[in-house]
Amino acid sequence: MVGRHEHYACEDTIMSTVKPIPENSSVVMPMLVCRDVAAAIDFCKSAFGAVELGRRPGPDGTVAHALLTISGAMVIIEAEWPTLASRAPQSDGSSPVVIFVYVEDVDKVVERAVAAGAKVVLPVKNQFWGDRTGRIMDPSGHVWTVATRVEETSSAEREQRWFKITKG
Image (cartoon, rainbow, N blue to C red):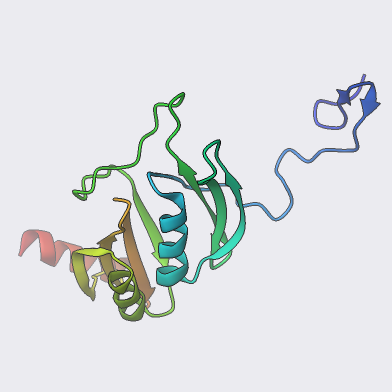
């Protein structure tokens, strides 16, 4: 008997060994459902320096699917499909999912994102745990926390700072 992930038959042909997780693939990939996939690709390229690995057209010829990387991490951009319940977020910042991305310079990235059509949800500022962060909503309605580590902190420092914030 052939092992579960070793081989499978396809039209009377034995396929070669298949890895259950594709080589060079992120194990966790956000799939961002958008109304305009091409515009979302352009935004990610402009704001985050995303690299497009591939795109696929839908039945009407518009872009329906794309695979990007942002600093090596994979992100899928997907069109809404009538047969699937997933929909693009509302453009009011209420998305229940926030994508957290570390970048070299949070201020420059947020500036580029705003120039590409993003809205600032939370202005960039230093945080108690040692990151400088800002939160933006992209033109598709997806919310991103953009961060740069600016200070290494110990667990004790973070706990003390958090206590001061919450207890005064």
